[in-house]
Amino acid sequence: MPRRDGAGPVWWHGRFRGCGYRITAGREAILGVLMIAEKHLSAEDVYNKVHPANPAVGLTTIYRTLEILVNMGLVFKFDFGDGRARYELVEGSKKSHHHHHLVCTKCMRIIDYTEFINEEIELLKTTEKGLSKKYGFDITSHIIQFYGICSVCQKGN
Amino acid sequence: MPRRDGAGPVWWHGRFRGCGYRITAGREAILGVLMIAEKHLSAEDVYNKVHPANPAVGLTTIYRTLEILVNMGLVFKFDFGDGRARYELVEGSKKSHHHHHLVCTKCMRIIDYTEFINEEIELLKTTEKGLSKKYGFDITSHIIQFYGICSVCQKGN
DNA sequence: CTGTTTAATGAAAACCATTTTCATTAAATA
DNA sequence: TATTTAATGAAAATGGTTTTCATTAAACAG
Image: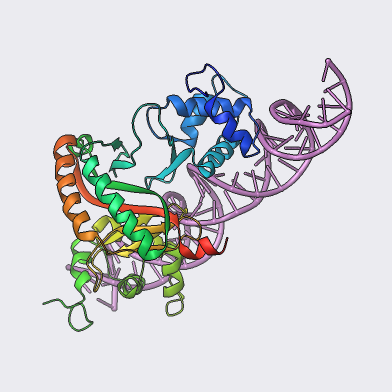
């Protein structure tokens, strides 16, 4: 059975090959970074984390790989409104998967909140079902974001 | 009393002057377009609607005015993930103000849904209060977006 | 293991929405 | 009407992302 801890076949190799993609050192490095990431990373963040151990991997490859991962559904791409996309593994190692954020529009600090999520998820499920039916959408994901000013920025004014 | 139907002082002039901004033909045209807009417009959309009657107004002014309006809280700026921002008057002429969208990730068709909103708003109010308290955020707005493939794109595949 | 096919790659250029620069114009006010 | 200075357009700059193109290397057949 494929494992996610390094022993045995790497979990995503099969899916990659199945899609006709090759396994390369760069892609291994990028997935590796995403797998241990604590938060959503920008393409440049990924680059900065990959580069030290893999100077041969350029930013272009980061973008290309992230795009593939997003299209495969392995990675979620976020837009917080600051002009750069953020990426995050869909199946994080620990935390269940939420896209519920609190965004500071001043410093772009982003908090993934987990409170109140259960009721939200319940309601969203119902809403999603209703919207799918009414508008004929095939809904694949959702996002909830609260925008405001974080406590630090409130003080530092 | 300021009115919004064209008779009497224009409702936003006071707020504009109060902020030290001048009333110009370009700004009148831009606000005019936003006031009759049926949906969220990109800066270029606004430009295309303003330009015929006001060839003297450039795209730069559109961007500058929209930024002012966003900062003043008169206009909301959205990011649907296709690399261009959309703008919408906060106080639309008719519809109450919702930021609940259904986004087709293929054709970028965007539907503002109004179903299921009441329960959502109720829950969001509670969530917002809880988050504000827990994280010390001063929350000013929120957004809910469902992503998927619209019925047209599903067929056209 | 070796050769062949073709996907993957890096570097540089292109892209494109948005922002900035700067000299000019015009709104507000005296 | 004159003065002040915000607003403006055109063009250049910006910056994240994508494309181009010649080179490299993963996959796989023999």
